[in-house]
Length: 295
Image (tube, rainbow, N blue to C red; front, side, top):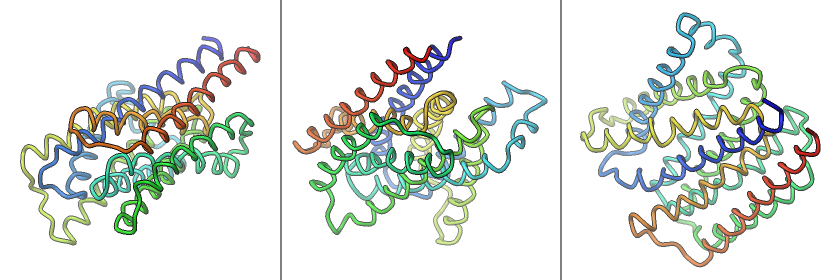
């Protein structure tokens, strides 16, 4: 497969990851009584077993070798994913889906900065322009949605964005190998931390079958399959673009909640979403043209 075809395939995988992740809000709104740490425990336990099964089927006897082949980058990426998972759940349970998702739109800015710091990647001028436009779109919605009462939710959304950016950079560090071990470590870390928090604060691990089922669905279908697609695409898609491409999640997430749950959003959400989607389209089109010239 040519470099150009690999890039286009990678873009498709990352866009599908954003599509799966965009279901986060509409699914988590089905939770009835479970708190964030109980949700995280079952969500990431199911994610852990999904990734373990996938790696066992793929590598069989070499499973252990694959898991520990690039331990440093995988553990660091797993820590980043831990913060991303915890931050997003706490945030969305304390504010609107639109507010959380559009705060996560700052992810490309963090990613681009970290890429220059850790990878010495050159971020092309059109990607910087797209990032700027996307940030403007996010800010339009942030200023309409955020108030002092939602400051905690906003803080955790920003922590989630920073964590996911760091996870993305670690994927780029390990781009010549299987990237799913980093997800394996991230889900394992989150299970351990959520279990410790539940025990320390006296939260029961036993929750209703409904909430358990919804949490497991979040782990396997909403984030698990999306992460598989994302880690495959991350091999060939530059770090700064990864964050932009999955911002389809930011645009579609509030729409799904509006369609299925009637959770409305303002005119600012529509305007900001237009800016974000336009930035993604602009960056992808110009990037494909650049790869066509380089091929």
